[in-house]
Length: 353
Ligand code: ASP
Image (cartoon, rainbow, N blue to C red; front, side):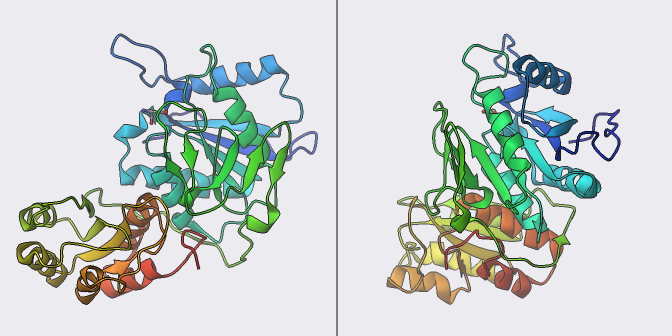
């Protein structure tokens, strides 16, 4: 993902005292156009967005600039694209009061999680949004989502990475895409919404992230292949584990386990393969396949077996957040123990108490 020049921020200070938001367009349905092979990304979205907002009058919206990063279908996203997003936010952090990231819905939850871990201690809103129908098409949800995101990005009390879609603002690192075709495509199964978007925007102030800490922004280079994921299923084999962690660049494995964090502990081949991976220094992270609830590795013997291998229980983290956090940690340190410790800490609301 590269910046498509030229981007010239409007000069400071804004003439009318309005708050200023930078909109970063990374791709997704919202800016796509129809083609014989289906919707595809197209450049030039900033102009289309500006004229669409002008046509509605855009009264009450903050002042905004739009920066386009070589738009992609977010199914093509790689962890290294998070570097480009974080770079742009860090570069323009002081010039704006808030940020909106326009992103495809398919991997928006992964990117919102990753940015929350890269921008620890952030003191301004960073709001992800996109749409189910391209902007400009009949019944598109694009413009309304952008308008809501712009208003949220101008609220100084929001000091976290949020995901605004349809009728809700969710914590970014708690969000999951749960519906392919509904306008409310996202939910956060283990955390209540941060705001309801009806005629009014109702912020749940008691649910917002209020911990203040020094900014610890990071723009690391990611190895796209550092983390592998294995979803457990009846009959899953040691060979499947070996095939995944046998890739030399894999340094972390997210296991989507059953229920409270259980695996087929009596399958010697499966457990031996996990043991070989752990011995080679691969960090094992245990997330549950269940939508609701938490990994508790000691409840069943089938879960304790994973604990004995040093697997980190991910609590009630989403699989997307666990994957992104493991990537961020592996991109930041070569010390596997530090990675395990980091995975066990709650950084910015990604885990319940
Ligand atoms: N494939 C699209 C994307 O994630 C879907 C969307 O944006 O809704 O970029």
